Every structure is written in C-alpha cells, then in structure tokens.
Image (cartoon, rainbow, N blue to C red):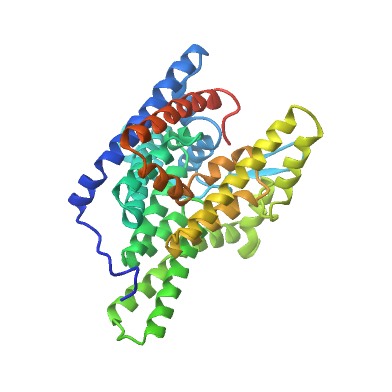
Length: 389
C-alpha cells in the first residue's frame, strides 16, 4: 500500500456532519453576495438574475443546450467565435434539467451552478481536512467563498462544476479510490479545457504509486494495481474525446480545437502576451498603479504555490495547481478573465487556510467576515460593470 492509500475516508453521513460548518458558512457567504448583488442591481435598474444567467459565457452555454454545436459569430476583424470552444457537460446538464422540469436552459444553468458550488465547497473541505485537519478545511472553504470573483461561483458558468469534479477527483486520489478519481477526471475533462490538470494529477500520482511499490519491493495488491490502472485510463477520456470530436467536426484533425481557440484569440504563449499587457500599464499614470497591482497579484500566486511546495502538499495537489496556474497565467486569453480562470486552483488557498486555522476562532471569523463583505460589494460592482468574460 502507498502513502496515498493508507488513510481511509469517513462514511458519507459522517463526512457530511464533519463538513457541515464549512458548508453552512459557504452558503451564508454566497447568500450575502447574492443579496448585495440584488440590491446593487435594483439600484441601477438591472436584473441580478439576468447578470447571473443570461450574459457573457452563460449565453453561449444555453445556446449549445438549446441548439447544439455549430453556431459561430464572425467579427469585423476576421476573428471567428465558435461555440465549439465551450465544453459540453454544463450544456448537457442544462438540457437535462429543462427536460425533467419546467425550468428554462438558463434556469438549469443557474441551478447546476448553485448545486455544483456547494459540491465544490464540500470537495475543497474534504481535501483540506484530509491533508491538514478540520479547521483548515473550514477556512479553505470560506477563503474560496470570499474570493474577489467569488460571485462567479453562483453564475451559470462552468467554474463551480469543474471545481467540484476536480476537488472530488483529487480527494479520491488521496484516499486511494482510483476508479472514482479517473471517472471524475474524465467528467472534469468534459467541462473545461483545464480538465487536463486533473488528468495530469491522476497520472502523476498513479505513476508515483507504481514507482514507490517497485522501490519498496513489497507484495503487490493485484486488485489495487488494476483499479489504479483503470483510473489512469479513464482520466483522459473526457478531454481527449471532446477534442478529437471537434477535430473531426472541423475537418482539421486532432489540432482542430486549437484552431477554434485561436478564433477567440486564446492560446498558450508562455505568458508573453500577458507580460506585454502588464508592461503597457507602465507607459502612463495612473495605469502604472494597475500594472503594479497585477505584478503583485502574480507574485502572490507564485508565492502561495512555493509555500505549498515547502509545506509538502501531496503531489497530486501540486501537479493540479501547477497546471491550472500555468494555463491561466501563460495563456493569451482575455486578461480580465485570469482571476476567474485561477479560481479552480483552490490548493493555493491552503497555506492561508492553515494560517487562519492557527488563529483564535473570533479573530479568524472577524477576518473572514470582513473579507466576505468586501467580496460581496466587489462582486456586485463587477457584475454591474465590466464583469466577465
């Protein structure tokens, strides 16, 4: 047995009771965000529900759910925005909700987002609790809830759904449930392109487990090895399946999805475009302040990752976080979306969760409560202004 497989997971009922404080706190923070958004939107004569369900990417997802793939928009500069860029699991779930209820596709997306956000919070707690204990788990969930762009967790977007699948897949790896980990990684791969981060975590953890067994020379558990191999085989099926299907549909082969992303001016350039974007901020004042803020933000993300390495986070978490962070920071996509793209990288919050867990409960509650109010106000301001994508 490997070190990832010797710690048993609690029963489902016991796990829910253990996670209850984190989940109740999460629901309270998100409810505060929605109330503030509703009040702010009403003051500006806007519909908060429309902002959450029928703008930006949410419209593309509901269009896929209603009409399927094949819709595209050709811009004056020659760019082609195709809905093939949007992975299918969320639209499938929207279609399912609409089929079994009187809800619309947009309503279905909102419902899926709400349910998935709670599932994501539970998954984050399960991972943090397994690695660092219950108090750190509660703090990790609340930190995820109070992120400045946390309002996205309540939108008809795919971030919450992806984070839920990723967190539970990672938890399954940590507790030796390899087939479950692979199945959830496959579903994550049907949700967002960054699903490859979950695949990488499963594969690296699996290879490391095989290597440890070989070095230790201990007797092999054939059933365990079979389940591990099955999980590794299942993990990439979602991402690979959709990417290959897009390549077949476009007639451009395995790299067809990259052409679709190029139409949106998305691609991986090692961070060159983002670096230029930041550098341009320093050509005038006060935009230089924004540039300094961006540099500080990136430095903070890198610092949190380094701290996680020093604190010896489990290998699957480090691999997953590293891939999500690299794809978010080194892609040439719309720069305003980078905080949202980093949101699934929840292990970055574990060092902060550990620090909060060491404080007295009253002090940590004061810190989290203050940040929750600030996050709610910022979320309402953001969605009523520039907002996503």
